[in-house]
Length: 123
Image (tube, rainbow, N blue to C red; front, top):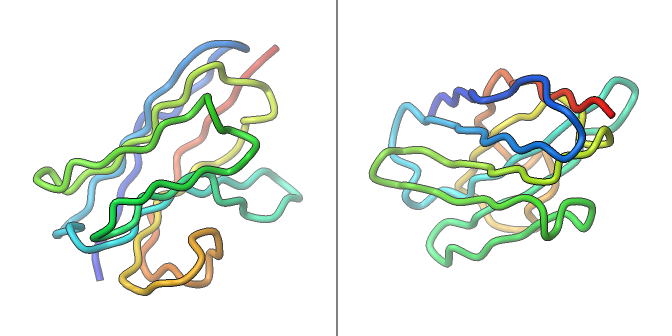
């Protein structure tokens, strides 16, 4: 059960870029790592994931072509590079980890969560 901590959020303008980082307290080599986001009044939405072992990557349709998820297992760190940010991307972004399988976008399947980092995109 690793502890996670996100960083890299901030306030930017439409079209700008940000890179989020998520550092884990222990090994994430075999873990599926995911990024979720949540805005006030909205459900928590899966943004991207990178699976353990297979290293398969999945993205939400809303961000395909704009965001890139990657991992550096030696540093126990996962990244989310966000380009061409839009106001609709404004949310609290969370890093999550799990050892289980199944679909990547269900928050309830993840056992470790970071406290989140805020991303605000202004038009």
